[in-house]
Every structure is written in C-alpha cells, then in structure tokens.
Image (tube, one colour):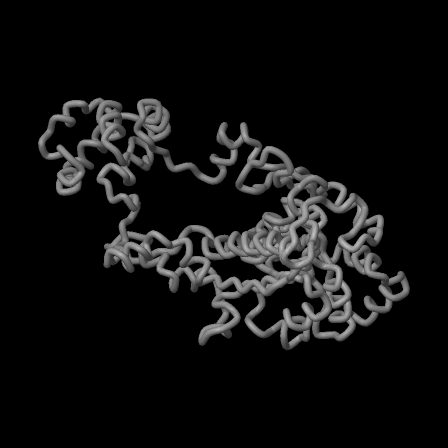
Length: 434
C-alpha cells in the first residue's frame, strides 16, 4: 500500500502483506480480500463508499478495479440502482445490469444512518479507512454527524470525497444534480444536435461518468499527495464543474477567440467538409478526413480521383464553400457499397473513417478481443461480460475479480473486522440498524 510519512518527508515502500497501515494484523476476511488485489496500485487502500446510482459508484469502481477495498454502504434493502426498470428479471434479483456494471470488486454493508448505532459503525470504520466517498446533497452528511469535519477529527489522514451536482458551496449547492440537468446547464446540449432540430442530450449519462472519472482522479491525486504530507483532505467534486472542464476547448473558443459554438450535427470540431457523417448503401459512414493527404486518399479510394483537379475543391476554404456539392459526390460514390466495406477499404487507403457500430457489435470487435477489454466474472446466473478499466498497464492493471455484491452480503464480515461479535451483530439486525 502507499506508505505514509511525516509532512515534508518522502519515503517509498509497501506495507507487508497481511498488515494494516498501523502494523496491526488484519482479520482473515480482510487478508483474503486484499490478497486477490495484491500488486495493483491501490491494494491496501480502504474506501467507505456511500455513493449511489452512477457518478459516485463509477468513481469507486475504477479504484476497486485497481485494487482498493471498497466497502459499499447502502441503506437497508439496497440502493435504487439495483432495481432499474430495464429488466424485471434482474431488478427482482436486486441486481439490475446498470448496478452490476459499476459495482464489481466491492463489498456491501447495509446501515440505517438515521440510527445512532449505525453512525457509530461508520465512525469505527472511518477510524481505519483511507477514503470516504459520498454523493448526497451538500450538508446531508454533516447533519448526520458524518461529514468531513466529524470524521477527520477521528482520522486526520482521511481523504473525504464529496460528489454533488454543484459542489459544497455557492448559491446552487443545495440543488439536486442529475445527468440530464447538468448536460443542459454545462453547454453540452447547446452544442449537440442539429440546428433545424434543436439541442439533444448525449445517448448515455456522460456527465455522470465524467464526474465519476474526475472523482477517481482527484482521490488518486490526494492519496499520492498524502505520501508527502501525511495529511488527509476534503475533495469537493461538482458535476457542473467537472463537465465544464471537459469542454476546455469549446470554452476557450469563446473566451479567447469570441467564437459562439453552434450545433454542428455530426461534423467534427475541425469543421472540415470531409469530417462528417455520410450515407452509404446500407447505413452511414463517419469520415474523419482532416488533412490534405487524407483528402487525396479519400477521393482516390472512392474512385473519384478526378475531383482532385476540380477548382471548386482546391483547398479547405473552397471545400467548405462548396460543401453541398462535395457531399453529393462523396455520397453518390459511397452508395455503391455497405458502410463496413467502405470502412475497411478507406482505412486501408489512409482515409480515416468508421461505420456506426452498435454496442452489441463493438464488444466483439477484434481489437476489443485482442486487448481483453471485455472481462468476465462468475455469477449465480452464469458468466457475465462487463467492461473493466479503459487502459492497460504493464503490471498491476485493473481487473474485475468479483461480481457486484448482493444487498448487505458482507455486513457480518465487515462488522466482525471492527470488533462486533455474533451477539452484537444479531442485536443490530434485530434493531433494524443493519
């Protein structure tokens, strides 16, 4: 695990397997859990994860893939994401597909945080944790006595990451944040869609996952910084700010050059006439032809080398002025074959392009298969295929080891690790604390 030092000092090294940061021997359950994560970047890091739905769980999932022990703390009965309406069969199992997608490699502990005994459990866990994560509205955890101030008093090394729609301060801090709302506010929808049809949201919860990725990066940064300072800290992730950060070039187009970003349909941000969506025989082809060499490869590849001498298309400015005529020429040629045939042919000639792949197709793409980007995990209902981390490492990379946990599947084990015996656990269950 990450070795801590006094402020101003630097030290490298790893904690011995089977020991905690303080040198105390870990329980058998914790040893077994950390044993399968050994060698990964965050092995030995313990995270208390109060997050639910997508942004927060996506963040903690990235860290869990990379070896962190993530204890998912849910209300009794489990969080709402377990029962999304896509499939009644999986919802009835409390294991909706969207929940499974971002909760692998985690443990589940159920607690009713309205009860003092549950809050005492949290305080005991926080005393030995590295990270606490939550995505409630600003102030909710403070009112429960479980905010950063209260928990950092118990554990000054604690890194506390709060993910919310608008951050912990400011006039909108008390507002609920939802992906669609943030897409609308951040500028994403204003530049997405076709002028004649109006704005449209992305086809997935882009602001949720961008915020989750931001949260995971922030926690990673804080863990590294703690190796130098020995100090924990509060991380305040705003979905609105995280989404805006990913619009860095569009923001600069306005703040630097005064450019008002239009809705440009499927056209690339380069605004090149040949970087757009074109119709082929069966479907569509996305061309990403952005330089002169690629343009010549495109026209030659579609059998229209004669167009290279057409004065209407002599340079990129003229091609833009005569974009409609150029589009007609390209689409007439593409109509001769299906999009995937053109995809192979044009990429081979040096004209970048892609047909429109469906999710059910891309997961079986030879490139995805060759790099083992899809991972499999055992479940009571057979082996499931899921997406892991989006990058490869020479050693210690992300790996999916265990299926998302059932509701409260690890409650007894986690409580036993912090000193609760069987009778105490039974009493907590009888009082509906767990």
